[in-house]
Image 1 (cartoon, rainbow, N blue to C red):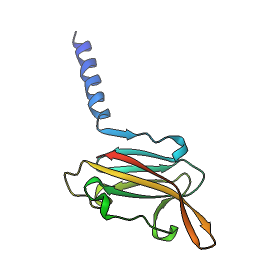
Image 2 (image 1 turned 90 degrees about the vertical axis):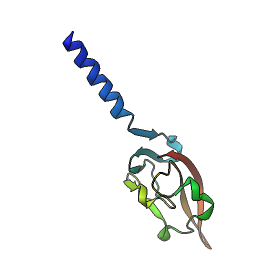
Image 3 (image 1 turned 135 degrees about the horizontal axis):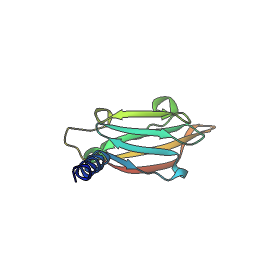
Length: 125
């Protein structure tokens, strides 16, 4: 009986720990995998091209604009992973429970650069 009780306690602890990580699965075509592990948002570029991103708190989304060229943007090279602390999220304040991740690619044009494949993903912090 004691052995069975220990097994249940271990299983309950594992479930509680698993609940602390909230994966946000992005479709493979989006080239970015995202995991929310407080106090970080973990990003990985799973594609073959650089991907640029911006994360803003839900309460301040309307106050921000996306960058217009690669040199002014946060980006991920193919295969690169990055942990973004909640403090780095635009407009984040303690107690904020949601944010939006925007990510895209750039293509070069005769005039400069153009954003392509702009996607967004809601995040629960």
